[in-house]
Each structure stands twice: as C-alpha cells, then as structure tokens.
Length: 344
Image (cartoon, rainbow, N blue to C red; front, side, top):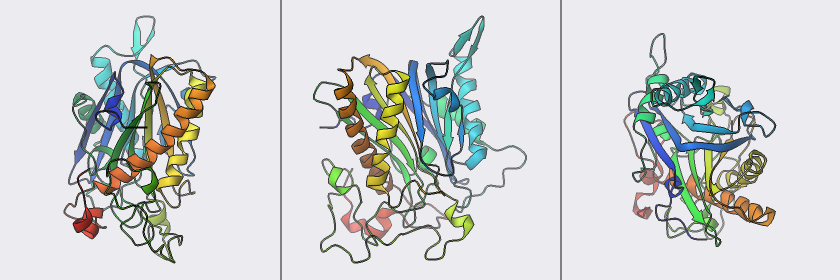
C-alpha cells in the first residue's frame, strides 16, 4: 500500500488540522476538525489515561458523531483544551442540535509533559483552553509540520525526544487511512541504544531515515529502556502516554470504528518498546468521514491491518522529526544521529 499524496492525516478529505504550542511551556495542543460531523470511537489500552467525552464514543451510546478530536499536553490540565476548541466551534455554528441549542462534541486525550523542563508556573488557570482555541482557529488543510509541534511540542521517550507524527496509506480499493499521533512513551521507539526504529519494517520511501534494522542485532536490544533509566522514579515513569487519531474516509458504524481502533493498537506495539504499560495512557481514536463505501467485513480487516502499519510509521516519523529547544532534558533523534538523518 502506498501513502496518499501528503502522507498525512490530511489525505482524508473533509478534515482540517490545527496546532498551537508555547515554547516556554514546552507543551501544546493539536486538533482535528471534521467539515461535517464524523462517526468516531476509541480504544484505551494504557493504564493511565486522561480523557474527556470518551464514554459517548462507545457503540451503544446515543451520540453517533463528533465535531472534532483533541490531543493535548498538560496531563489533566490539558483537558481544558477541548473547551477552547468547543468555544471556537460554537462561535462557528457547529454542534449537536438539541432543539435550538447546539453542543459541539469534542472528545479529547492528554499526555503528561509537566516534568519536561518547561515553565509550568501558569498561576490560577492553565493556558490550555486558550491553546485549544488557537489550535482550532489555525486549523487548515495546509501540509503538516512534524516533530516538536502541537501536542508533540514537549513530548519525550525513554531515549530521545518524542513528537507529533503522521502517515497515510491508500488501500487497493481506493479507501484511505491515516494517523496523527503524539509520541510521549515511557519506553523507546529505538532498538536498544541504536538509531534504528522498531517500526523499520513498515517504513515507506525513507520517511524516517531508511536505516532498517541494526546488523548485527544488539545483544541488549530487548532490555527495557524506560524513562528514569535503570531505577526509574515514580515521577519519571508516570510522565508518559502516546495518543493517536486514526482517520479514514471509509463508511463505518461506531462498532466498526471501535474495532478499527482496537486493531490499530498493534501499531503501538510495533513502534514502541514497551507499549501499553501501567504508566502510559495509550489511546487511539478512530474517525470515519464516510465518503467511501466499505466492502464488507473483509475490507474492515484489511483496513485494520493498514491502520496498525500507518500508526507505527507515524510514531517513528514523529520521533525522527523532533527538533532541539532550549531547556530540553533529553536529546532529539537528530542530535544523536545527525549524520544519518534523511529528509522525511
């Protein structure tokens, strides 16, 4: 399967993406807005999630569609970002109609970046509501930046900086699937202490360096690399979570979107070692714009396989594209491996 023309979530027609971040804060917000309300569901497999409005995404719940999805830094403080996005949508006449009232439906997930070297002394109220509004106002279909932007601005992994990644694929039948992910894992996207990505078998067109797997295989490749080194502190290991939006133009029910989100979590396991720990809030939203008919359950299986691969690629791209900034506590991939970097 080949990527779409942008190799990003913007290959799904009918979506726009916006980001806002604060360099001093070392944190930010990313939002995906659907031109028309879209079917969505969610699967959480990490042990420490932070979420808003995810209960309504269960297949048996009443509300079928969402207006936007939010990924944010800031741990529980970052849940305020959804209120900012909701305010922008309300100002623009969006929302679930209940009589004359309209309520924008904006599920959100957060990652923990409070201990990454940024200035979190914001006073009484956190800045995330304003960052969410700014991200929504900036949403567009322009090509996406990757790495240290939006929800990935302050992300880290066990060995290098994390970041915001995206990737897409087009199925033989014409359906497109794509991911947007903020990578802030307790584990590592790299094999051992090498520059090589766990997601290497799924790479397309050198999108994260064309390095493949290391040879010879490192003896210590499968030793866990965790934030906090050999004896991680509770503060270090709790400072995590990888959160993702997997979008498709296939027509899905909420139940099918839920199954797609479940299958997509395989991409976390292919790209991060370890994944789904008690200290991560690993989560995948699945979003369907419904512009292409789905050819039955066999094509849903094919879509799930592609979704997991796309998510693995997006994770590696986000880490690969991270850039250094003043006050960083860990290096980015390019600082450790600059001579091996290729354009992505």
